[in-house]
Image (cartoon, rainbow, N blue to C red):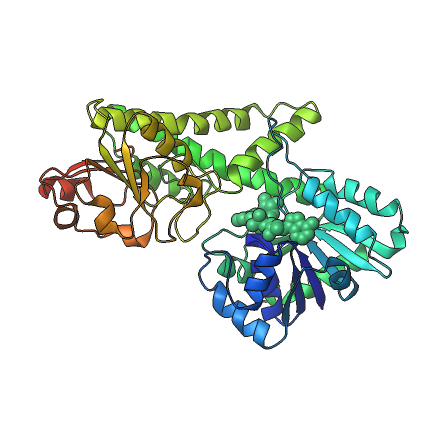
Length: 432
Ligand code: NAD
Protein backbone atom coordinates (compact mmCIF):
# COMPACT_ATOMS: atom_id res chain seq x y z
CA UNK A 1 0.00 0.00 0.00
CA UNK A 2 1.04 3.60 -0.47
CA UNK A 3 1.24 5.44 2.81
CA UNK A 4 2.02 8.99 3.91
CA UNK A 5 2.94 9.70 7.53
CA UNK A 6 2.47 13.39 8.39
CA UNK A 7 4.78 14.22 11.30
CA UNK A 8 8.07 12.33 11.55
CA UNK A 9 8.48 12.30 15.33
CA UNK A 10 8.50 9.41 17.81
CA UNK A 11 5.23 7.99 16.46
CA UNK A 12 5.34 8.97 12.77
CA UNK A 13 8.93 7.88 12.22
CA UNK A 14 8.68 4.57 14.09
CA UNK A 15 5.37 3.50 12.57
CA UNK A 16 6.34 4.80 9.11
CA UNK A 17 9.57 2.83 9.10
CA UNK A 18 7.84 -0.29 10.40
CA UNK A 19 5.05 -0.03 7.79
CA UNK A 20 7.75 0.12 5.10
CA UNK A 21 9.48 -2.90 6.63
CA UNK A 22 6.32 -5.00 6.19
CA UNK A 23 6.24 -4.19 2.48
CA UNK A 24 4.47 -0.85 2.04
CA UNK A 25 5.70 2.24 0.18
CA UNK A 26 5.96 4.92 2.82
CA UNK A 27 6.71 8.64 2.65
CA UNK A 28 7.47 10.24 6.01
CA UNK A 29 6.70 13.96 5.81
CA UNK A 30 7.74 16.68 8.22
CA UNK A 31 7.86 20.45 7.92
CA UNK A 32 11.16 20.41 9.81
CA UNK A 33 13.61 20.58 6.88
CA UNK A 34 16.60 19.89 9.09
CA UNK A 35 15.04 16.67 10.42
CA UNK A 36 14.19 15.45 6.92
CA UNK A 37 17.66 16.28 5.54
CA UNK A 38 19.28 14.47 8.46
CA UNK A 39 17.08 11.41 7.95
CA UNK A 40 18.10 11.31 4.28
CA UNK A 41 21.71 11.23 5.54
CA UNK A 42 20.88 8.38 7.92
CA UNK A 43 20.93 10.62 11.02
CA UNK A 44 18.09 9.59 13.34
CA UNK A 45 16.56 12.46 15.34
CA UNK A 46 15.60 10.35 18.37
CA UNK A 47 17.11 7.64 20.53
CA UNK A 48 15.05 4.50 19.98
CA UNK A 49 16.64 1.02 20.10
CA UNK A 50 16.57 -0.81 16.75
CA UNK A 51 15.26 2.17 14.78
CA UNK A 52 18.40 3.22 12.93
CA UNK A 53 18.97 -0.19 11.32
CA UNK A 54 15.39 -0.30 10.04
CA UNK A 55 15.55 3.26 8.68
CA UNK A 56 18.81 2.58 6.80
CA UNK A 57 17.57 -0.74 5.41
CA UNK A 58 14.24 0.56 4.11
CA UNK A 59 15.56 3.91 2.90
CA UNK A 60 18.25 2.14 0.90
CA UNK A 61 15.82 -0.33 -0.67
CA UNK A 62 13.48 2.52 -1.63
CA UNK A 63 10.44 1.43 0.42
CA UNK A 64 10.90 4.44 2.71
CA UNK A 65 11.18 8.06 1.60
CA UNK A 66 11.45 11.37 3.43
CA UNK A 67 9.95 14.64 2.25
CA UNK A 68 8.86 18.11 3.30
CA UNK A 69 6.36 18.33 0.43
CA UNK A 70 3.01 17.33 1.90
CA UNK A 71 0.91 17.99 -1.21
CA UNK A 72 3.06 15.81 -3.44
CA UNK A 73 3.29 13.06 -0.78
CA UNK A 74 -0.50 13.03 -0.35
CA UNK A 75 -0.97 12.72 -4.10
CA UNK A 76 1.27 9.67 -4.18
CA UNK A 77 -0.49 7.93 -1.25
CA UNK A 78 -3.77 6.14 -0.58
CA UNK A 79 -3.56 6.21 3.22
CA UNK A 80 -2.54 9.31 5.21
CA UNK A 81 -1.64 9.00 8.88
CA UNK A 82 -1.69 12.19 10.95
CA UNK A 83 1.09 11.82 13.55
CA UNK A 84 1.69 15.42 14.68
CA UNK A 85 1.88 16.61 18.28
CA UNK A 86 -1.15 17.24 20.49
CA UNK A 87 0.40 19.04 23.49
CA UNK A 88 -1.51 20.58 26.37
CA UNK A 89 -2.99 24.01 25.62
CA UNK A 90 -1.26 26.95 27.26
CA UNK A 91 -2.87 27.66 30.67
CA UNK A 92 -5.58 25.04 30.08
CA UNK A 93 -5.87 21.27 30.49
CA UNK A 94 -7.30 20.45 27.06
CA UNK A 95 -5.27 19.20 24.08
CA UNK A 96 -4.04 21.81 21.62
CA UNK A 97 -5.22 20.52 18.25
CA UNK A 98 -3.72 23.31 16.13
CA UNK A 99 -1.20 21.00 14.43
CA UNK A 100 -3.85 18.37 13.66
CA UNK A 101 -6.32 20.85 12.17
CA UNK A 102 -3.55 22.55 10.16
CA UNK A 103 -2.73 19.20 8.60
CA UNK A 104 -6.45 18.53 7.96
CA UNK A 105 -6.67 21.81 6.04
CA UNK A 106 -3.56 20.97 4.03
CA UNK A 107 -5.00 17.55 3.19
CA UNK A 108 -8.29 19.17 2.17
CA UNK A 109 -6.47 21.36 -0.31
CA UNK A 110 -4.50 18.45 -1.77
CA UNK A 111 -6.87 15.52 -2.35
CA UNK A 112 -8.37 14.72 -5.72
CA UNK A 113 -9.04 10.97 -5.39
CA UNK A 114 -10.18 8.70 -2.53
CA UNK A 115 -7.92 8.79 0.57
CA UNK A 116 -8.20 7.23 3.99
CA UNK A 117 -7.19 9.87 6.54
CA UNK A 118 -6.19 8.44 9.89
CA UNK A 119 -5.48 10.08 13.22
CA UNK A 120 -2.61 8.24 14.90
CA UNK A 121 -1.99 11.29 17.06
CA UNK A 122 -3.77 11.04 20.40
CA UNK A 123 -6.83 13.22 19.90
CA UNK A 124 -9.88 13.92 22.09
CA UNK A 125 -13.25 12.39 21.31
CA UNK A 126 -14.99 14.16 18.39
CA UNK A 127 -11.73 15.33 16.76
CA UNK A 128 -12.42 12.93 13.87
CA UNK A 129 -15.86 14.55 13.44
CA UNK A 130 -14.16 17.96 13.29
CA UNK A 131 -11.58 16.81 10.71
CA UNK A 132 -14.41 15.41 8.59
CA UNK A 133 -16.17 18.78 8.82
CA UNK A 134 -13.03 20.70 7.82
CA UNK A 135 -12.42 18.55 4.74
CA UNK A 136 -16.04 18.24 3.63
CA UNK A 137 -16.18 22.01 3.62
CA UNK A 138 -14.46 21.90 0.24
CA UNK A 139 -14.37 18.25 -0.81
CA UNK A 140 -17.10 15.65 -1.40
CA UNK A 141 -17.48 13.05 1.37
CA UNK A 142 -17.02 10.36 -1.32
CA UNK A 143 -13.40 11.45 -1.69
CA UNK A 144 -12.26 10.58 1.82
CA UNK A 145 -12.88 8.65 5.00
CA UNK A 146 -11.64 9.81 8.42
CA UNK A 147 -10.58 6.97 10.72
CA UNK A 148 -9.14 6.84 14.25
CA UNK A 149 -6.24 4.42 14.79
CA UNK A 150 -4.65 5.36 18.13
CA UNK A 151 -1.03 4.39 18.71
CA UNK A 152 -0.04 2.46 21.82
CA UNK A 153 3.72 2.07 21.28
CA UNK A 154 6.02 2.77 24.22
CA UNK A 155 9.15 4.81 23.71
CA UNK A 156 12.18 2.62 24.34
CA UNK A 157 10.35 -0.44 23.03
CA UNK A 158 8.62 1.23 20.13
CA UNK A 159 9.84 -0.96 17.26
CA UNK A 160 8.95 -4.16 19.08
CA UNK A 161 5.60 -2.68 20.14
CA UNK A 162 4.80 -1.85 16.51
CA UNK A 163 5.47 -5.38 15.29
CA UNK A 164 3.90 -7.13 18.30
CA UNK A 165 1.09 -4.91 19.59
CA UNK A 166 -1.45 -6.26 22.08
CA UNK A 167 -4.21 -4.76 19.95
CA UNK A 168 -4.89 -2.68 16.86
CA UNK A 169 -7.87 -0.39 17.27
CA UNK A 170 -9.59 0.89 14.15
CA UNK A 171 -12.37 3.41 14.71
CA UNK A 172 -14.56 3.64 11.64
CA UNK A 173 -18.02 2.69 10.43
CA UNK A 174 -16.81 2.81 6.81
CA UNK A 175 -16.72 -0.80 5.59
CA UNK A 176 -14.27 -0.10 2.74
CA UNK A 177 -11.75 1.64 5.02
CA UNK A 178 -11.99 -1.11 7.61
CA UNK A 179 -11.31 -3.74 4.93
CA UNK A 180 -8.26 -1.87 3.63
CA UNK A 181 -6.85 -1.32 7.12
CA UNK A 182 -7.43 -4.94 8.12
CA UNK A 183 -5.36 -5.86 5.10
CA UNK A 184 -2.64 -3.30 5.98
CA UNK A 185 -2.33 -4.71 9.50
CA UNK A 186 -2.70 -8.39 8.50
CA UNK A 187 1.06 -9.15 8.91
CA UNK A 188 0.75 -8.11 12.58
CA UNK A 189 -2.59 -9.83 13.13
CA UNK A 190 -1.11 -13.07 11.77
CA UNK A 191 1.58 -12.81 14.49
CA UNK A 192 -1.05 -12.61 17.23
CA UNK A 193 -2.21 -8.98 17.50
CA UNK A 194 -5.93 -8.55 18.19
CA UNK A 195 -7.70 -6.34 15.64
CA UNK A 196 -10.80 -4.52 16.83
CA UNK A 197 -13.14 -2.32 14.86
CA UNK A 198 -15.08 0.26 16.88
CA UNK A 199 -16.84 3.53 16.27
CA UNK A 200 -14.45 6.41 15.60
CA UNK A 201 -15.33 8.12 18.87
CA UNK A 202 -14.80 4.90 20.86
CA UNK A 203 -11.32 4.46 19.35
CA UNK A 204 -10.42 8.02 20.33
CA UNK A 205 -11.57 7.41 23.90
CA UNK A 206 -9.91 3.97 24.21
CA UNK A 207 -6.51 5.67 23.92
CA UNK A 208 -7.18 8.27 26.64
CA UNK A 209 -8.91 5.79 28.95
CA UNK A 210 -5.95 3.39 28.61
CA UNK A 211 -3.37 6.06 29.45
CA UNK A 212 -5.46 7.40 32.33
CA UNK A 213 -5.78 3.88 33.73
CA UNK A 214 -2.02 3.22 33.52
CA UNK A 215 -1.28 6.59 35.14
CA UNK A 216 -3.73 5.66 37.90
CA UNK A 217 -1.95 2.34 38.48
CA UNK A 218 1.43 4.08 38.87
CA UNK A 219 -0.02 6.72 41.17
CA UNK A 220 -1.80 4.06 43.21
CA UNK A 221 1.40 2.14 43.97
CA UNK A 222 3.28 5.40 44.63
CA UNK A 223 0.74 6.30 47.31
CA UNK A 224 0.89 2.78 48.78
CA UNK A 225 4.70 3.22 48.86
CA UNK A 226 4.23 6.35 50.98
CA UNK A 227 2.28 4.28 53.50
CA UNK A 228 4.86 1.45 53.41
CA UNK A 229 7.60 3.90 54.35
CA UNK A 230 5.69 4.88 57.50
CA UNK A 231 5.06 1.34 58.70
CA UNK A 232 8.26 -0.42 57.67
CA UNK A 233 6.87 -2.59 54.90
CA UNK A 234 8.60 -3.31 51.59
CA UNK A 235 6.34 -1.99 48.80
CA UNK A 236 7.80 -4.61 46.45
CA UNK A 237 6.13 -7.33 48.54
CA UNK A 238 2.86 -5.48 48.05
CA UNK A 239 3.43 -5.19 44.27
CA UNK A 240 4.19 -8.89 43.97
CA UNK A 241 1.28 -9.89 46.18
CA UNK A 242 -1.13 -7.67 44.24
CA UNK A 243 0.29 -8.33 40.78
CA UNK A 244 -0.18 -12.10 41.02
CA UNK A 245 -3.92 -11.49 41.00
CA UNK A 246 -4.77 -11.83 37.31
CA UNK A 247 -7.46 -9.18 37.63
CA UNK A 248 -4.75 -6.70 38.65
CA UNK A 249 -1.55 -7.79 36.83
CA UNK A 250 2.00 -6.97 37.83
CA UNK A 251 2.93 -4.28 35.30
CA UNK A 252 2.90 -0.58 36.20
CA UNK A 253 2.99 -1.47 39.88
CA UNK A 254 6.56 -0.30 40.51
CA UNK A 255 6.84 2.58 42.93
CA UNK A 256 9.09 5.43 41.86
CA UNK A 257 9.11 9.11 40.95
CA UNK A 258 6.13 10.92 39.44
CA UNK A 259 5.06 9.58 36.06
CA UNK A 260 6.22 11.77 33.19
CA UNK A 261 6.82 11.55 29.46
CA UNK A 262 5.11 12.87 26.41
CA UNK A 263 1.80 11.07 27.04
CA UNK A 264 0.51 10.40 30.57
CA UNK A 265 0.69 13.95 31.97
CA UNK A 266 -0.92 15.58 28.94
CA UNK A 267 -3.42 12.79 28.24
CA UNK A 268 -4.73 12.58 31.82
CA UNK A 269 -5.34 16.33 31.72
CA UNK A 270 -6.93 16.20 28.27
CA UNK A 271 -9.40 13.45 29.16
CA UNK A 272 -10.63 15.39 32.20
CA UNK A 273 -10.98 18.53 30.05
CA UNK A 274 -12.98 16.58 27.45
CA UNK A 275 -15.20 15.12 30.18
CA UNK A 276 -15.74 18.58 31.69
CA UNK A 277 -16.83 19.78 28.23
CA UNK A 278 -19.44 17.01 28.22
CA UNK A 279 -20.44 17.85 31.82
CA UNK A 280 -18.95 14.70 33.34
CA UNK A 281 -16.62 14.90 36.31
CA UNK A 282 -13.76 12.39 36.09
CA UNK A 283 -12.94 12.96 39.74
CA UNK A 284 -10.69 9.90 40.08
CA UNK A 285 -8.39 10.98 37.23
CA UNK A 286 -8.32 14.55 38.58
CA UNK A 287 -7.10 13.16 41.91
CA UNK A 288 -4.44 11.10 40.13
CA UNK A 289 -3.16 14.23 38.38
CA UNK A 290 -2.94 16.11 41.70
CA UNK A 291 -1.25 13.22 43.48
CA UNK A 292 1.31 12.92 40.68
CA UNK A 293 1.97 16.66 40.72
CA UNK A 294 2.61 16.47 44.49
CA UNK A 295 4.96 13.54 44.14
CA UNK A 296 8.04 15.51 43.09
CA UNK A 297 7.74 17.88 46.10
CA UNK A 298 7.31 14.86 48.33
CA UNK A 299 10.54 13.32 46.99
CA UNK A 300 12.35 16.66 47.39
CA UNK A 301 11.22 16.68 51.03
CA UNK A 302 12.86 13.29 51.43
CA UNK A 303 16.06 14.62 49.86
CA UNK A 304 16.03 17.43 52.44
CA UNK A 305 15.55 14.91 55.27
CA UNK A 306 18.37 12.71 53.94
CA UNK A 307 20.74 15.72 53.89
CA UNK A 308 19.55 16.95 57.31
CA UNK A 309 18.14 20.08 55.63
CA UNK A 310 21.68 21.26 54.82
CA UNK A 311 21.46 21.58 51.09
CA UNK A 312 23.43 24.73 50.26
CA UNK A 313 26.55 23.96 48.18
CA UNK A 314 25.92 20.21 48.47
CA UNK A 315 26.84 18.24 45.37
CA UNK A 316 23.83 16.20 44.24
CA UNK A 317 24.32 13.78 41.36
CA UNK A 318 21.47 12.63 39.16
CA UNK A 319 21.90 9.33 37.34
CA UNK A 320 19.45 9.48 34.46
CA UNK A 321 17.22 12.43 33.69
CA UNK A 322 14.84 11.10 31.02
CA UNK A 323 11.37 10.10 32.20
CA UNK A 324 12.19 6.44 31.67
CA UNK A 325 15.00 4.27 30.34
CA UNK A 326 15.83 3.63 26.67
CA UNK A 327 14.58 6.98 25.42
CA UNK A 328 16.04 10.45 25.07
CA UNK A 329 12.61 12.02 25.63
CA UNK A 330 12.69 14.69 28.35
CA UNK A 331 9.07 15.82 27.99
CA UNK A 332 7.52 16.15 31.47
CA UNK A 333 10.32 14.16 33.11
CA UNK A 334 9.96 14.50 36.89
CA UNK A 335 13.55 15.71 37.18
CA UNK A 336 12.52 18.87 35.32
CA UNK A 337 10.79 19.97 38.50
CA UNK A 338 13.17 18.35 41.00
CA UNK A 339 16.49 19.60 39.60
CA UNK A 340 15.47 23.30 39.39
CA UNK A 341 13.98 23.15 42.93
CA UNK A 342 17.13 21.65 44.45
CA UNK A 343 19.23 24.07 42.44
CA UNK A 344 17.19 26.99 43.77
CA UNK A 345 17.87 25.80 47.32
CA UNK A 346 21.60 26.11 46.61
CA UNK A 347 22.54 22.56 45.62
CA UNK A 348 25.09 21.98 42.88
CA UNK A 349 23.77 19.40 40.46
CA UNK A 350 25.78 17.07 38.28
CA UNK A 351 23.87 14.75 36.01
CA UNK A 352 24.70 11.93 33.67
CA UNK A 353 22.34 10.37 31.15
CA UNK A 354 23.26 7.74 28.55
CA UNK A 355 21.49 9.87 25.91
CA UNK A 356 23.72 12.85 26.60
CA UNK A 357 23.45 16.49 27.57
CA UNK A 358 19.96 18.01 27.81
CA UNK A 359 19.07 21.45 26.46
CA UNK A 360 16.16 21.57 28.95
CA UNK A 361 18.69 21.87 31.81
CA UNK A 362 21.12 24.23 30.10
CA UNK A 363 19.68 27.45 31.51
CA UNK A 364 20.28 26.55 35.16
CA UNK A 365 23.42 27.79 36.83
CA UNK A 366 25.25 25.04 38.69
CA UNK A 367 23.52 22.24 36.79
CA UNK A 368 26.30 20.48 34.95
CA UNK A 369 26.37 17.53 32.58
CA UNK A 370 29.02 14.90 33.33
CA UNK A 371 30.40 12.76 30.55
CA UNK A 372 30.20 9.50 32.50
CA UNK A 373 28.91 7.92 35.70
CA UNK A 374 32.27 8.21 37.41
CA UNK A 375 32.66 11.98 37.00
CA UNK A 376 28.98 12.52 37.88
CA UNK A 377 29.17 10.78 41.24
CA UNK A 378 32.74 11.50 42.25
CA UNK A 379 32.82 13.31 45.64
CA UNK A 380 29.05 13.57 45.61
CA UNK A 381 27.12 14.33 48.80
CA UNK A 382 24.05 12.54 47.48
CA UNK A 383 23.58 10.28 44.47
CA UNK A 384 20.04 10.15 43.12
CA UNK A 385 19.15 7.29 40.80
CA UNK A 386 16.36 8.88 38.80
CA UNK A 387 16.00 6.66 35.70
CA UNK A 388 16.15 2.87 35.52
CA UNK A 389 18.80 2.53 32.77
CA UNK A 390 20.62 -0.83 32.78
CA UNK A 391 23.86 1.20 33.01
CA UNK A 392 22.95 2.08 36.61
CA UNK A 393 22.10 -1.41 37.84
CA UNK A 394 25.54 -2.63 38.92
CA UNK A 395 27.69 0.33 39.85
CA UNK A 396 30.53 -0.06 42.30
CA UNK A 397 29.61 3.12 44.14
CA UNK A 398 32.33 2.91 46.78
CA UNK A 399 35.19 2.83 44.32
CA UNK A 400 33.69 5.38 41.91
CA UNK A 401 32.36 7.94 44.37
CA UNK A 402 35.81 8.42 45.93
CA UNK A 403 34.52 9.61 49.28
CA UNK A 404 34.18 7.76 52.53
CA UNK A 405 30.52 8.55 53.06
CA UNK A 406 28.39 7.46 50.11
CA UNK A 407 24.70 8.38 50.32
CA UNK A 408 22.28 7.13 47.69
CA UNK A 409 18.61 7.88 47.10
CA UNK A 410 17.47 5.18 44.69
CA UNK A 411 14.14 6.39 43.28
CA UNK A 412 13.81 3.23 41.17
CA UNK A 413 14.61 0.58 43.80
CA UNK A 414 17.39 -0.89 41.65
CA UNK A 415 19.53 -2.10 44.56
CA UNK A 416 19.06 -4.31 47.59
CA UNK A 417 18.90 -2.31 50.85
CA UNK A 418 20.61 -5.11 52.81
CA UNK A 419 23.54 -5.34 50.37
CA UNK A 420 23.96 -1.58 50.58
CA UNK A 421 23.95 -1.76 54.36
CA UNK A 422 26.65 -4.45 54.27
CA UNK A 423 28.74 -2.20 52.01
CA UNK A 424 28.41 0.58 54.56
CA UNK A 425 26.52 2.80 52.16
CA UNK A 426 23.74 5.03 53.46
CA UNK A 427 20.95 3.93 51.15
CA UNK A 428 17.40 5.21 50.77
CA UNK A 429 14.82 3.94 48.30
CA UNK A 430 11.09 4.23 47.67
CA UNK A 431 8.49 2.46 49.79
CA UNK A 432 10.87 0.17 51.62
P1 NAD B 1 6.74 14.59 18.08
O1 NAD B 1 6.71 15.96 18.59
O2 NAD B 1 7.92 13.71 18.35
O3 NAD B 1 6.51 14.59 16.49
C1 NAD B 1 5.59 15.38 15.83
C2 NAD B 1 6.18 15.80 14.50
O4 NAD B 1 5.18 16.43 13.71
C3 NAD B 1 7.31 16.82 14.62
O5 NAD B 1 8.47 16.31 13.97
C4 NAD B 1 6.78 18.08 13.90
O6 NAD B 1 7.80 18.80 13.23
C5 NAD B 1 5.79 17.45 12.94
N1 NAD B 1 4.74 18.36 12.43
C6 NAD B 1 3.93 19.18 13.13
N2 NAD B 1 3.10 19.83 12.28
C7 NAD B 1 3.38 19.40 11.03
C8 NAD B 1 2.85 19.69 9.74
N3 NAD B 1 1.87 20.57 9.57
N4 NAD B 1 3.39 19.06 8.66
C9 NAD B 1 4.41 18.18 8.81
N5 NAD B 1 4.93 17.85 10.02
C10 NAD B 1 4.43 18.46 11.11
O7 NAD B 1 5.42 13.89 18.65
P2 NAD B 1 5.19 12.33 19.00
O8 NAD B 1 5.78 12.01 20.32
O9 NAD B 1 5.52 11.51 17.82
O10 NAD B 1 3.60 12.32 19.20
C11 NAD B 1 2.72 12.51 18.12
C12 NAD B 1 1.33 12.11 18.58
O11 NAD B 1 1.31 10.72 18.91
C13 NAD B 1 0.84 12.84 19.83
O12 NAD B 1 -0.54 13.05 19.70
C14 NAD B 1 1.12 11.87 20.94
O13 NAD B 1 0.27 12.04 22.03
C15 NAD B 1 0.84 10.54 20.25
N6 NAD B 1 1.54 9.41 20.84
C16 NAD B 1 2.85 9.52 21.23
C17 NAD B 1 3.51 8.42 21.76
C18 NAD B 1 4.94 8.54 22.22
O14 NAD B 1 5.40 7.62 22.90
N7 NAD B 1 5.66 9.59 21.89
C19 NAD B 1 2.85 7.17 21.89
C20 NAD B 1 1.53 7.08 21.44
C21 NAD B 1 0.89 8.20 20.92
